[in-house]
Length: 291
Length: 219
Image 1 (cartoon, helix red, strand yellow):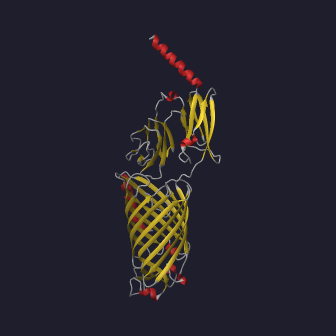
Image 2 (cartoon, each protein chain N blue to C red):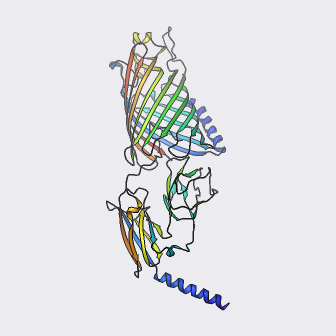
């Protein structure tokens, strides 16, 4: 956890600075239980490893609305994930976020746009996945009425990790440094006063990591390769360039004005260079709370 | 001096006599399943317009607590001034697009927002431009005889002078026009008049306060 202490301290200083600038505190929390049938993104059924994980996030923001519908937000998220079996993937992360939102008009149905940047650090139990995370995003949305809500988001993200220890000399071992661009769209519809359904879709292009048993075909198309003992002896992580298509269907129920519980199902399909294709299915249970 | 004393005494006696003959209208509002409906506004319009004169226009307030308007429904007499104190420790930006009153208060904290005069009868829907889920209603009544039901679905209009009244109900979620609830009620010698309404309510969809797992985060 030592590597995330510095970013955490920076985050606290950042929040305190914005607080003195007279922002409004916003505190939120979320938790989820989910199951991934292909945690390592393996193509072959024999290499697929499934696992369940619990995750929790606490978000703290300072919101500073100012004239003409602009609102500046600064703050951060503190998150953790615990896996049932793959304990090397247990991680804690801290992320600082700065965003500027603009509403074109008054009211809940005014269209809005948001530009944001984030800087984070994630620390894994296995150590070699530890990384610094950077991202920039553009979002826009519009609530059509009390029942329909639409939004879209484009994000570009970078992940910088130290090259993993490797016995392979002819290829980079910098597997966990990645770059990617993601475009998401979503629509939410209120089924009743308390229940809503959300459908989301994503398209991502960039680096992906597939962990599998040694495979000469994947090796030939990889940008980097390194042993990945978290998935067992003989497992290798391959960094490939790929395109991911995803969809998520979720159902949420308002327990109170402050909290939601939900269930969702996400499917991701990736086509990576060299014909490496894999899929992930992830059912999940979620809880969200906003103070 | 004697004339002034006589006039004051006469006024007091007439006033007491009028109060002695005034009645109370007790209303119970239920939905079609027999459940009590709170936040319904009961309005009694006298057939004799003179009964509605000389009414003091009070100053009212709609507070903002825990990022909600409190009360959710406020009934005021036309011409009333309403303040919007902010009891939250964050800023709000209250507005309304309603034809009965269009206004927009600037971002503010505390109690220093200028009061708003509601000079036209009708329903005013309140919102906050920072917190989209906040919604509240001000019913601007064209009669001084009105009340709002509590959680038990009951409301009481006191000091009704004798006479005929057209009584109607309004609720933010009612499934028909307010005029469809009109009923003729006669206030006579009885000190208390009881009446009951049954309203159909439609689903009340509101902007959710909490962002879901896959929804855009707030703020």
